[in-house]
Length: 172
Image (tube, helix red, strand yellow):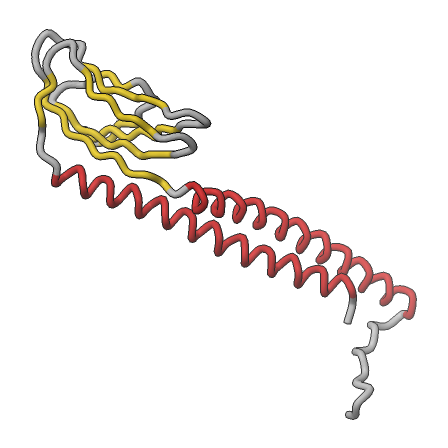
């Protein structure tokens, strides 16, 4: 068997493993977002008086997803994505705990409801490793395929005819 064919098979195997890890990780993240939004729907609103805030403490080395809804846009000290009146934010901490807060900067009370879910970092890392593995497998498979095709046509040109299939040393 041609060595480049074996390298191409290894590339395809890495590609499949990477796709599996990527799908697993993105499916997990989709499940976290979906369950967070479902939990937000079942929460009830609470009143946030003017000038007051609600703090969320994120433990060290943690990623959390915060989803909230309010009767008026309120300040949240993190990057927020808004869709259909629901606000989503990913909050993180490194070596020390971090504090994020909702703040009511209005002169009247604002009703707010929120949900905080922890994201398993190891599953997110697996998705990242999966994406890298997909690219590595793809590159290996493409290079091995190109080299294999070139070597096939070189053999054909040298002999003037296509190379014969390998013979089985154990019988017909």
